[in-house]
Image: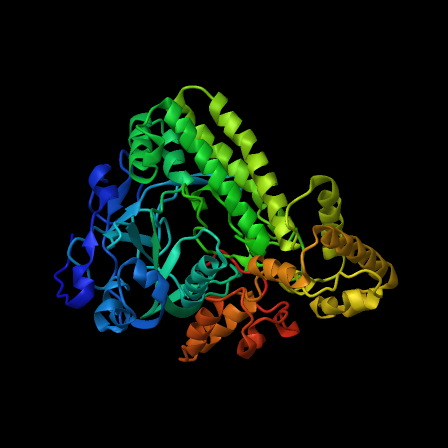
Length: 536
């Protein structure tokens, strides 16, 4: 399966321990044609050769996970390897077989249609990192697609993966963004106007890319032997602390997945992230944010907002519904786990517990966002409820509101105007601030100030706590689009500049204030700056 390759330096020293392909059954057919794949967890397949691979950017933090230095990432060999043009010794390229529920409906076999796993690197700390190329060509799971990816979606995934990491949100990682030199035809909004666009490949890293759908496809086909084999592999490989696989251990494992998924939902709501396409095949067993498609950042606070044009009518995957959808997706994973355990009670209990995990985490998170020392239910639940009623009534920038709230003075006996002054810049349409709204906001701010004073901590400490959880810099959609525009014009520097800003999302960066402001009006409805499609 491998091509001849010549390697030198640190890249040649990468060690591969390909546990997934070694321990699980492969597709016996080697021809790379679209088909249903049975009795296998993956198909071996080679990335396609590209015309002129050219590096756009790398993440030095992700590179260290593979023991690579920045100089290693600037070589021609790096661009060839991580665009799929050359294999290193020990690589075992393959695409995984999985299914999934898409927009609530069973879709059958899906699989890695444009992602090819190169293998698992073992770093100097003994950590295993699966290395995956997204956009590296067709696989047996590509259906009618070409397996390629375009620059705009690839750049967005590259930047957002690393932005989420620096925000402290569990996520897959992105090592590199490489232009292929080829063009790819895409109809961005499925409206009958396809265009040729620059092709690109993102190299992604994760402990594994195993999803809920890997188990769903096997359960749906009644392949319970392979279902158990995959479950046992995952427990022994990724969750060994649970003990040897057994019905009770499967239940404890599901409970751990529920807990991790609940924590992930809390993080998404904390920073204003909307995944946009929470199909079960886009849910990680590790509780990671995975598959950055038509995602978006909540700008004006609207719990019903979705960044996905495909979801514009039903809004199944809107910001406010994400925890409920996570619960629904976990229920589909529980269905797949029933044959492993033999009865439903522990799975049902874990699904009930998910609600508690999420609610407890969300309340603690909201207390942190407001700078409170600890969550106090009787006082804080009404405070939260009224705030979340206020925010969507006028166009209020979520990120800026919570950041500026840290600057609101809380001492007693000051005028409402002085109290609310730090918030004046957070509104997109100040004309919406009528007298009735201002009165409600002033009343809420007074209640909030009284609550903070009861805590007794100095303003400086409160600001420090709030700034540690409320980011100043997020990857607003229009910023990503500006970077895409620049790269399309042959200028790569904005990608690296944004990557550097997003490395310190909670810090004041006086020379980067232009990246912290509200979405400009020109971006309100521009494609790429508001909603996006599932088209790559």
